[in-house]
Length: 337
Image (cartoon, rainbow, N blue to C red; front, side, top):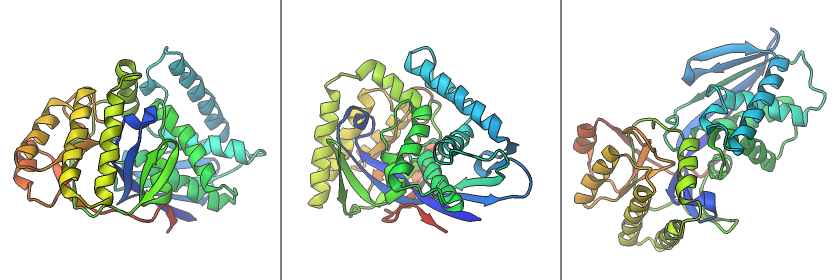
């Protein structure tokens, strides 16, 4: 039996814009996804998705067929004939696909008699902008690599993880996967990845609830309306300024940039009215906040809101029916347990 864990992430600035080559600043945080893989005597592959209350057994041939069907649906999505949310028919297929796709490409002569238990669990809010899918993927790939001695490199983890994430999100930036793999804080710009110290600021996260629309749907929506829009240059300017402010530990500019980033996210339509009202009330208290992640284009929830500072906001959180906690940066990436 092999167990592995990988951390969640927060995008401090640059979500959506990173998909169009603009910079982003993001860090790993101390919430984790865990995968356990083990050989079993009973036949086939037993999947146990603890957080989804799903457990079942599938054969290798069935998984191979599933993989082909998923890839066919993804081609329909790329042609504009299918919504990204229909590429996977249920969320469990993320790991099903990652498993069979990896095994088929690495273990060429895969045995039809391969018998494994694959179990996942997580304390990362699912579908709320903290990279839960990426953390699960990376922890799973690390565990299966060690159990089956597949000789995968970290670059391979990123490749297979991104193949799976593309099917869920349409186009994965790879940031979530990178941070789950390496931990720490990084500035992503112009194809370069620059390591930063973890921010010397207090961060609280407010969970507004799982969005009605997933990341893939939000990314597709923004692409339809803003793909070649200059607004992403505005995102880039804010992220660059925020990176400099954090390097200089300038809290005034940090707060200004966080709020400016939020305004841009509102402009591209991924901040529901209720969440905007909450953030506006924080602003009235001179507290900077923004959504982190894809947000939402329908419904009232937007996943996680990042709040700068340690002020007591419990009354406001209670008023809106949200949950909150203080979170810390995580310097370490995926690891065996």
